[in-house]
Image (cartoon, rainbow, N blue to C red):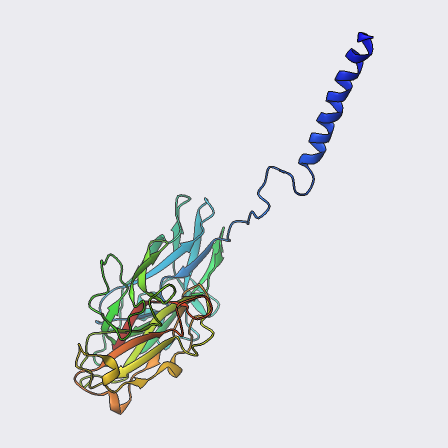
Amino acid sequence: MTAPMRTRFPVLLAFLSAVAVFAVGCDGFDTGQAPDATTAADPTVSFATDNISLVEEDSPVEIAVTISDPPNDTVAVEVLYADGVSGTDPSDFGLEENPAVGSGVVAGTVVFPDTATTGNTQTLSLDIQDDVENEEQEDGIFVLQGVTNASIGTTNELTVGIGAIELFFEDFEGQEDLAPLTVSNVTGGNGWGLSSFNDNQYAGANAFGGSEASNSWLITPSFNFTNFEDETLTFRNKKRFDDGGEEEPLQVKVSTDYDGSGNPENFTWTDVTDRVDNLAQGESFVPSGEVDLSDAQFQGDEVYVAFRYQSSGTGEGTSEGQQVDDIRIVGR
């Protein structure tokens, strides 16, 4: 009677083992891989900014290129001066002897090592040869091409203005607060503060979880526009989530009568939001394009520019996050 039991027991073990092996490969069982695992993001390279304006025409220009989601391999990309669409000449950037490609001239190549991480920057320096004084602004256009082991990101065109004077620039890098910009919170909701992501610092505001709906102003120092012409504003912007009850959570405004410290709602502001070519629709920074500030009404000796953040509430669907970076004001 004991022999059959010895025979059936190994058979039973084998059967149970087979069931276990089969179950591991079925839906709902452990396959050795998380069911929601996502693939790695594609590596991209982009210009660090879409616009550079030079204070002095005989100063070098530093063209910075950044990388996102690097592939653990060397990445190289050419910076091409676009002769056909530029208002300048290649010789203005010392490029007359560099190899020509189509309607452009190769300015140089930047290389990221295989140890690069997201946000790393490589810089190409060009010596400006244009020494004509007091000329109108001329724009040199640069593009990215010939990338290896990556693709070209959204900021793939850079405008270098020669002849423009930079009145203000703030990228918030290495700072502990938003100075020299000031914040005025009209309500008790969440207002502007210094934020960071992937080693990049910027101004951010998000009403979610606040005590009440937000009305917060981020205001530049004052500028004297009376000695300049063709003043323009550029910046970069991104957002998170959506405020279904607020049509324009981010507004750009200009004032010539603000006192520099009071409640901005008590002063006169001109809304120039409709002059912004691009406001972010998602979680990637987009360049604003040039915002014209040359109106006769702005030609005062104390001109302020403000980014006004508003929300319709403090919860999901009634608030969104807004971020602003690389604020630049130039004239000539």
